Length: 251
Image (cartoon, rainbow, N blue to C red; front, side):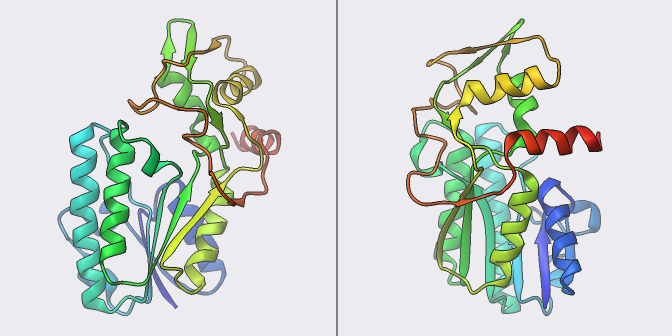
């Protein structure tokens, strides 16, 4: 089977590409640096020729509200048009748990706009909404730093390892389209600030994590359950301690 992975050289993309190739599939790792650009349309027609499945893992280079919305709308229009012309039979996209519950979060609004384009495209699809990746805990701490303090909302958090995300994305891509949602999350749930505090302590970062109900995440307010699945979700297998051991062993 020919599968095109948009964003195929990124964190999740590179892992997904490797898994699918191990399964014997013809996989195109598509990104601007491999000559496929969803914003300009460059290389899309050639990449889509003969493809049965497209996995969209592309991410905006800017997180500014207007820029990220323009990225996902333009990229989505171009990609879905190319897929329709090529007769692609399954579009898989990775989105975020809570996109429909955080209207003041610009990034989440942009992902929701992307989801709506996919749903209206007429191409059979599966949307995978994931919680945040464990790999981003350090960046989250840095973006929330206030001197020697890290201010984070105390809402619930259920981060998932990138290896688990890639495994589920690959599995979903090979299954029949659901024309609906799959939500995925890590196996452990705890307050947002507690996860980041555990991470900083484990890596020897002396900054103190302070729970702050007024702290923002991507510019949006976080309620108790804004960032976790509300209903049944597919859970990853890699817990925080296991993930940390693997990360430190490969560093």
